[in-house]
Image (cartoon, rainbow, N blue to C red; front, side, top):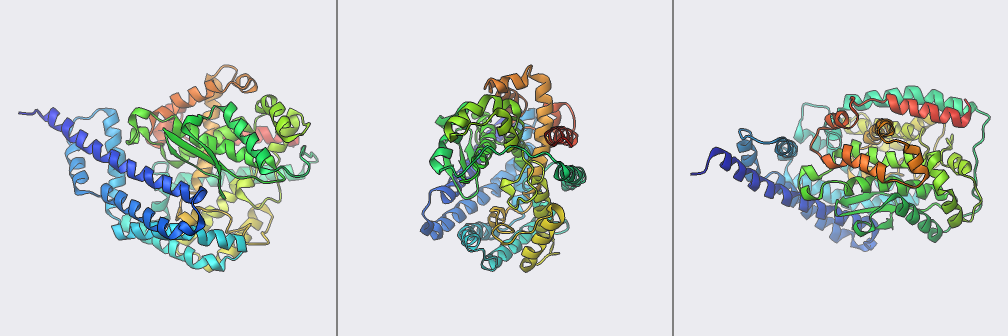
Length: 500
């Protein structure tokens, strides 16, 4: 006769096999999404919408399976080790949310999102918000329905935010955004009043092949594993994959090769996190990332605290000059990569400071859309008004205004705050990595990035989703999540650059 311990172990193994299948299906859907954005011919959309819908439905069925519910109930009373408890915690949370959402709603959301992509692309290309308005209205309504299914008595936007950051809380996000707005607006104003003009070493245009070679070299020196990745282009740069296959995309701006370089290093940060997850735990939460705030912290760490640093340009200047045919100094590249723009309308091209004002605009608009406090037809005007209020600039077109981002096309309402939360966490991790790594800047200056990879793997990557976000921050840094390090970093760096 089996003992209670043996029964529990058998139950856990059956449970884990199911969880792995669930993850594999989700990852297959990710590959289909990557293909649609990168490789698929435009005419493939009708079939792809059906395929992704079927994958989403199957994933939902596996997540809501009665057998999974039974195993979770049995494991409530089982003696589990900390890692097993973490797996059960994460799966239970996803299962409980999913069981409240009808399968047909999941299918409708997936199909609507897939169909929305070409509509958004054409609307943006034609600068025609009206052509996208009905699609956006459908996505908003579907996401309201989704939030109500999970918890009809809570703020629907809070419910959706927890899809992307389940543990820090919407109050934390709002507090951080408020703190940054209060601190950064005066700093940006002081920079605007400064007489300092930062260097611009670029003249003319740089073709795609030239820029591709530059960013490919950057990935080489930073330590991207080409055996487990690839570089492609996409209208909106992104990264996706698993610890066995983590791909990056970028895009090229003819007049500004640093735009592609920054985007590529950013996506490299995402990919190196994914590639650093434990391979032996693939298919379980222990081998999965810890949600989007942490994921964004990795991309912002590499983009801002490494790629935008003066030591990086002491190392990379000769390479950049060779590729671009420029004759710039390290200081000139450093200044060009850190210029604060007072007239930038595009979030993904924004500088490190005004970027967060872009996030606030999106956050406030999508929150009001989901709450029913803003009509879709009013989005362009409200968007333009907020851009003028927070950044002193007003878009002339919707293409450079409310149509510029892809996230609402994916139905990703609640996603945007994680960008700022990730930037804040990146600064916190950077502060502590510099305390632990002797000669941090000297390593960067020498192109020695292994010590940084090793530190991030030890403190963040190897844990997967074992810890809640707040607990992971404590584990990695020895302190609670805080915006203090980001604000100190931003103030010190940019007041020095602009002598203000």
